[in-house]
Image 1 (cartoon, rainbow, N blue to C red):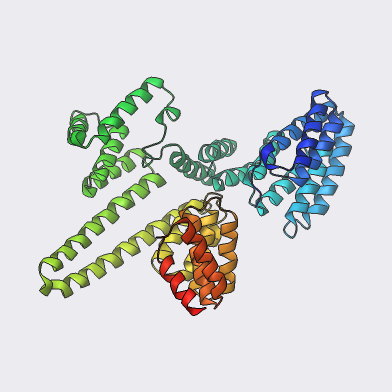
Image 2 (cartoon, rainbow, N blue to C red; image 1 turned 120 degrees about the horizontal axis):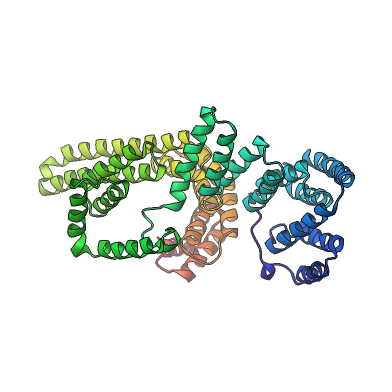
Length: 468
């Protein structure tokens, strides 16, 4: 996996080379600047500043070329890309180097740009793949295959609004294509998830709203909502607005959110369903909020049966049977919703992660494993997916593979936070199961030094120490 880097993250030698390259840029020494910047990018493909400067210089070079020069350099670049493309999956880093060689000859080479995008995706470097495909779409704005690929990569990287823009562009090129229109609706839903996350009550609403006055008003309303004593008053005002004819999408959403926060899932469901009806489509985020409401309803019924058994122990058997049935229904409901979302948006790796966790929590290890393998392509879910993969392999008794997953996850984690302690804990458990007591104990000690009351680490340490 290639991560974005700044000048502080690279070696002192490369920093020196970058300074020399920038001096060449300042002097407008285009060819020498490209030579230096290309070498830096080939060694550190994630160095964003060098990539930006390299592309600027390559644009200058391309602009100075005549017709025949562009044609000849394009042919040479295509040849380099074609040869490197044969081995892109086997050695993507080498393919990226060859792509940079080709682009240094001709930045508009479509085969070279495609090679760079493909190799970058093999290394999960979404930012590089997007850079390459954005250039390709700029030089070849009517190439639908490029636009479609860019939209898919935007979606996988979680860029909802950009995905929507590309899908709208494609749909405009094919006004009678129903599938293209469906792609636009799916992208619109993804954009809604990105731009209007209702559960994120701590987010900066000013950055989301175009109108400054609206932002101030929203902040004031949010302060009222946070004041528990005034919640009923706010609800009454909103209900009154509905009764007076102000049955707007915004009022319905606010009511649904408030009822959900207030622990009244039935009323929240009523208003969320009204939102869906008004929108004419099921926004994935609203769908998830509805799911939370239905789950809250299931949980409320389960709690009532447990309280019933506690009040009358003679009814425990009846209550346990009902709790088991309700729990089964709740799990099946969650699974059904997760599967539906993945079916509607198969390229959304965040939804794949959610499906994987439902499978895991229901004990379906094999299906969980399959979905976590897909979910790890999401840059924001990669590390936690690796930990879950390790746990899946652990449950299947494939300890050596589990260790590999845990170690990859730990390697990518910075700081001893809960996620990293979880990963180390499960790694230690696996080592313990393999009979590697010494290394398991060492791993438990790492956690103990950071947080002595984490899970049952102290108990495990004492037991393993006694075995030595």
